[in-house]
Amino acid sequence: MTVTDKKRPIPLLQRLLHSDIIGDASTYAEEWGSHFDFMYPLTNDRKMWVEQLAQKVFYWTGIADLYRRARHRRGATIQMYHSVSGPEESRWIDPRFTIPPQEFEAQVRFLAAHRNVVPFSGLVDMLERGENPPAGTVVITFDDGYLDTLRVAAPILEKYGLPAIVFLVTGYIDRAQNQWGDELFSLFVSHTRTNVSLPEIGQPTVDLRDARAKAGAYSALLSWFISALPGARTQMLARLADEFRPKCKAPRLTMNWEEVRELTRKYPGIEIGLHSAEHLDMTAHDGATAENELEECLRATHRELGIRPEHFAFPYNRVSPTARALVRQYGFRSAVASGEGVLISGKSDRLALPRMETCRSISLFRFRTGGAYPGLSRAMLRYS
Ligand SMILES: [Zn+2]
Image 1 (tube, rainbow, N blue to C red):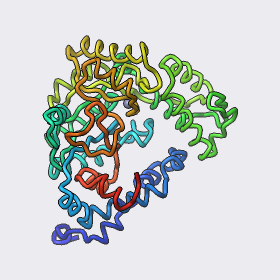
Image 2 (tube, rainbow, N blue to C red):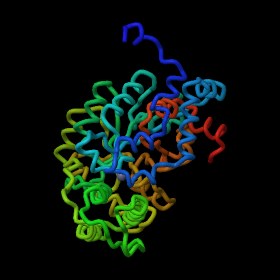
Image 3 (cartoon, rainbow, N blue to C red):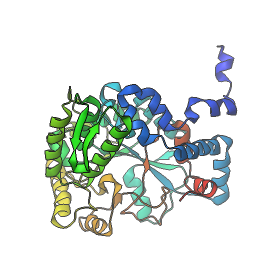
């Protein structure tokens, strides 16, 4: 290939046919191979694939830009990341919650060049003043406190001079323990038994060689764990380990406090927010249990970092009026949760700010951070 060839812009058709145009699910399937093939039924959704294809076409044809200008769309998006990991760690993490470093860097490089990335607290300041953030304003967030946030993501962000916030689950940081979700996923990729008994989810026998049955069991167990209390989760994980007999153990994926201190010391652009003490679903538990979660995570960050974080991320993005009121009562200035749409304006509820899930396609990412999403998709694709 000559230098001239390299400089020539890629024609539209070529872009559309490029692998990036294929939905995220297909990209994963190719990479996973047999190791992760049970995840395929959980991610291969034809409707989602068609929507993603349309969104990429909106971006590359310039329709998205026209729409944004015509509608005078303003507003910020908040990007939600969990792990950014290479092959050694990523094989132990549900692929929906991790992104390879090179793809993360491509997104960060694009944001640095074409979007207005502001600190999370900067966005909250703007909203408190009743301002509407300009289109293309983006905030970067990381949930849980993965070790790769320190080792992989923060150096990339620093290279491009972008800020971010990390929402910590303090109990897991105290114990430097892998999140229950990672422990569960690890069992599903390293089991030695082929038939397991899962009466807790109404399945006396599950044949783990059947990808669809395995996906169903994994999905049902995720739901079970989300609404369970911490003690019940610990007991269940011990029982499942006995049942699945994993051949090896995942490496440590969560930071300890010393590493969190290193993160804040080395990377001043990283803010610390909270994400509960034990990843408790605050819509499933209230009263003293929920209060204890907030008290404990505030106490731990004060003890370990000497700070009182002002921003909260509801576990699993689940919020109820009671949980919202409690977070306000404990003095948090803002909270992220699943909310209406993903475009944040001065009118958005600051205690239930919606976020956008990690997407691995750079075209989708460009479209979804530009200001025309979700309005244009809703108008053209008629989804709610
Ligand atoms: Zn979380």
